[in-house]
Length: 552
Ligand code: N01
Image 1 (cartoon, rainbow, N blue to C red):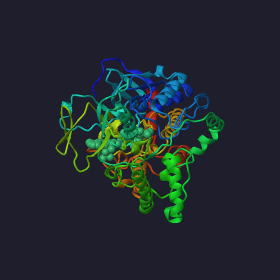
Image 2: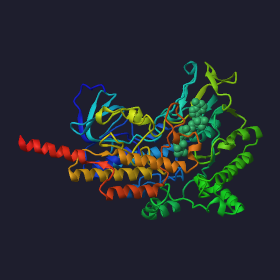
Image 3: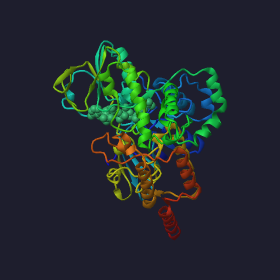
Image 4: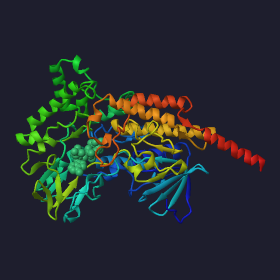
């Protein structure tokens, strides 16, 4: 860790990241509990994911009325225009909240954390940045997001392409005009699926390079009516509370039952209804879609049939049919007119499954010895998910152990909140939590509340150091893996498994027990005095220091 030449700036808490999590941490810890909080943010403004992902079509896929803070005043004042708001509106909302909570005064923008080391002699984290600045704090909280580090494949000859190459996760702030251009999109996950229909409308020609066909269902997005907004606002507390009792942290359609118990004709009718109205509700039609091969095959075939109904060219429809993984085991995408886009005369689909991209040239992309010429290329190739942001920081815990070393065989954590060997470090929506399978804003609120309560407990008890025990962490890691092993999730080469990043260990990165059960577990840990966290060392040190003081 290179030392900065300036005096450290000292705080109670240093937070990395000023997205939904970092902003809420400022509000909760600084404004409500009186901690001195400093947030370090790589971007030039607040917003995290919603600051960077400005590609055309970017929008949330949980209802905006609930993909938002549960703050009483804010939820009464803000009016969402659509069921699933687009990125500009979400960023506008984030800015509205930033003003309301006056968060910017606690944030250093354009500041990338490069290293953080735990000083065992003083129980503080020493945090270094690319601005040659140093910050110190008792607690370090990673609010770094799960999908914040773009995964950018390096294709041979990439540097020779003369046009612009844009990654969806780092979209230029002023937008991109593709009018009249020949455009390539590589990648057909959620980002590709959201952007492809809009790029197709603007570009002269669009070529989509698809390695794996993705299951996507219509978002059925629409404007909200005044009446709908009023009803939600009148009932927010009860709706938010009810959502905490669900598996995904949001109220949605209930399953009809398990595949074996439902009449297939009724189930198909229900799938049909949900296809038209509910977005993600499609895979929740049966309660065993993610554990039973038969149930999964039934739902998957329904979607494949839809593709064949919508896409006019049979060869293109065939290519768009996903066959490589059970539906739902990669994140189901929500789209607006995705399959319909392949009926446009200016759109073509190139499968790179059997014949991968050979290389980029000055003019375009070579596949199967054929050069496709482009003016611009879009990489919709995803993220080094869940662990990527933390692994890019040189984090050193107790005994000088790097986090990269601790996670060499895969990310480990206790409750997705703390890592053994890294005292006083908390991870908001960290690996091993259910966050990526939930309405992430609900998960963020839960974690921030839990961490705030814990800091208060530590403050009351005079404890200066806390660390997840090796045993508690091992139990939790085993529980996360065991739950995954009872499902179809490990069958997919997904970012949930780390498979999308070459060399990344294959470990299922999320807790599958559901948001409600997870909350109950975390609450029980708090109510029982935080078993699984070791305070003994800190208490011993406090006693030693007191003895030294008295003897001096
Ligand atoms: O990324 P992805 P994403 N050569 O990893 C392909 C959230 N999100 O940014 O499947 C060729 O899903 C890759 O192919 P394959 C959401 O949680 C939410 O789209 O690995 N192709 C795949 O097709 C989502 O799950 C929203 O074979 C390559 C694509 O690129 C998560 O973010 C919107 C390649 C990557 O898909 C990530 O979504 C957007 C290579 N070398 C994102 N490398 C909402 O709706 C990768 N690919 C809220």
